[in-house]
Image: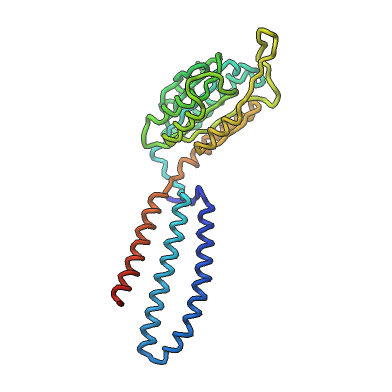
Length: 317
């Protein structure tokens, strides 16, 4: 059952509203101008009756035509309806950064352990109909848990993740998309957590985004790291090695795949993000696009109206 309607491009609907208002104003003055002629010929009862009947039919035909054009604007705005039915469930893959910087202790006991705890709590909150997988990435990617509905096994597998190496965000994203796309006919989501920037891997972040878009996968991203710089160690020359979060790329991933970006600066924020994500996902998974169906319906309406108007003119002539 539909709860409410949402538009991807609501501004197109407003253009349609403006079109309707302008048309009604123009049509009002047009009818006013014709009124004088109608009065003149109304003295002939037979002709007047025909004209009034014809004008009434023409009015309704034109109004229906304008309504159909307005509905075309609605269709082009990509309408989504929210459904209560959740028969199919969704597929979610948690993509977790396991690079060396995740041992930073600005989170307690460190970023890696805090991320694992939050991910486990997330799994516990998900619907039993949902399938969940886990991928970790550092220099390379690792399948921690294949897509399944057994929450205990998923949580146990999350506990095995350890931090080391560099950061291959693009590879992790692509692996998550590849896994979640393997199950058809379900809403597909990836939740990617990282505390750094791309320093390794064979797949660029841009290519990972394109892959997600091609598979209709929505990606939520979580940036981990305190406000202050965190020194992870020093290089051979004694220069400090600082953990740097590439927020720009994480925001880009989320924006271009229809997801959202979240920033966690401490344990409380990270836990809150993963606690609230299930509710957000449940709401968004019920949104179903009806753009194609609406466009087809409107086109049929327009063709029918124009055909009737044309047929009518042929008959008159």
